[in-house]
Image (spheres, rainbow, N blue to C red):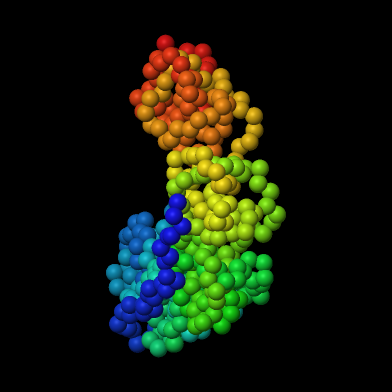
Length: 442
């Protein structure tokens, strides 16, 4: 294979961090009142001038909010209510905060049957940062503490962004929003749970390596440690690349980026979790065999172990072939490449996980039968046993045919070939898994 893939440029298209702002309607935003006056039935959980939309179980007229709440507690799956004061209609809800988050409505009173009104901890807030996307709903909140309460009251809310200019609170169903943080003056964002402990990049940071592609978002950060904090705050982030020339941090949705590392001076990359343990799978190496196709990318290496480590760092990598003549390591997304092994001098190929156990399924051989069609590839082997070993090494191989006249092994992608067995002298075929039990369905 020619080592000339087109390299994606590590310049993601920057999403505009501008939430769609609905026009503010109320002049006095609602705020949870711990002294709501509704007695023990709904202690501290009532939200005045607030409607819970969606998630309806049923609705009918009640004498009071308390009567509605009593019925909710007797109703299976009811966890919240919304009460319209003008006509005394009350909606029983199957989701805390309704299906679409609380909404300002002067004529409604709403409450969850259970709520959290403990002291608000703001240690997870990120000032000057927007968590764009993954919106559940939005409402006006008098301050960021009220926004926390709204998120607590809403099923599925795990984060929010608060616009200090117009007091709008955007509830989110993903930590860090859909793609992660972007710098935005006047917005403070917060995950409901976070880690603020110090991050060490010493173990997993790969210096002078870029992880191109699979970009979520980019944000300015002076150090890889700062970049790692943003990644930790972002639900979809599992890796990042930090470019020293402009201190841009690119958050990634896949380990190793879209297709694995590229040697790039001045770019340092890291998977949030990595494996630096000793390489112990070199018994899976197949010398003088190539696994063609299913390439993710190639990278120059010094030895087989280094190629293993690059594959470990790449999300979809399950195998590789290394050309000993030039040191190029070809990372693969399929065991055995796209269609299985082929003899190739100066190549060593390896599946990251392999089966080197004794061949014990030769009782599946059907002597004198060919499985025509559904061929992946064919190779010359010593015997049926070696043919089985190559099939094991090939991701889509489920059957094989061995031709005795020239010891040719045909690897198959379908049991029985494309149309089933055919009597053919000098051919022995087998499925990798078979049923030799007595026939009992006559």
